[in-house]
Image 1 (cartoon, one colour):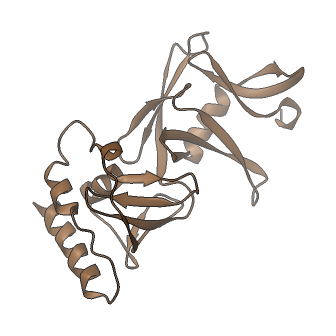
Image 2 (cartoon, rainbow, N blue to C red):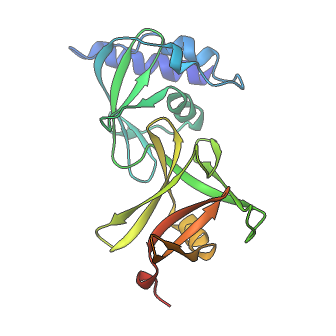
Length: 210
């Protein structure tokens, strides 16, 4: 009930702003938020209706009109109806409309790691996000690594679903490095990590400090 009230409050605040699009249909989505199956986003093709004042900070905090959204149930509801685009933008979608939101880095955070068959050929890495999504690193949920300019280190990301990634937290990154090893890729020694039979390169082996 409180989640529905929060939805209504956000809809009302946006409706009162001149030109601010109303996120119609979100109340209907919230009524089924507790179902085990995710919303059928692939079946929805609503028109784009502008931007909403929601921002996801680099640390995963959701901000609405300058204030954090404190209720985790509300964050989970919004995350369940988020989609990404090939252009790198992010949207909230309902059966009747689509609105843009701002994302500073990645929309999700990978906050926990489980390892099956550790250090074996069939090792599998299972990551869980801050909104409860659980994925096994592999062909459908690959790991990628980007350079972190301020630290000259790297930032790991895992694909959660189409165009939506989770940034792996620093603590979990250390755990991933501990599981890593060196393999030849294109004739060059590369440091990386294995999961579900795939090798995910991190950096040249020579860049790893002893």
